[in-house]
Image 1 (spheres, helix red, strand yellow):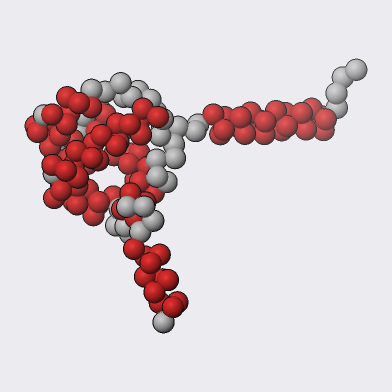
Image 2 (image 1 turned 135 degrees about the vertical axis):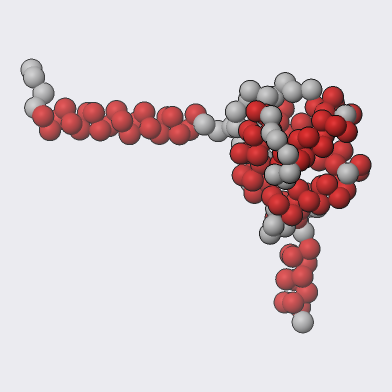
Length: 140
């Protein structure tokens, strides 16, 4: 039996829809190319750390991994690293902790650029001040 054009078109459209939905679900994490980066070496080297920071702040050139980080950083901060692998979350925690404890001004500059509305800061601080301010306003 030879299928007519209508049924063939339906089969092709169904295949395309299934293929598209499977492909979209497959992209659930950021690229893992640099997941094995030596983060300890970066945080222990002021030169390397500042080079990455300058890249992120558009104050200096970027390495390929710096460019990739620049691409993913805004989304990662807005979604609390929802697409990060466990390794990427570990790396992020190490770097953020190091910046907060050793380079507070640099950390603030990065927040100003990549977290202008303060949502990431509130997530990191455990809920944020805005919720408390709203509660205070409602109780008045």
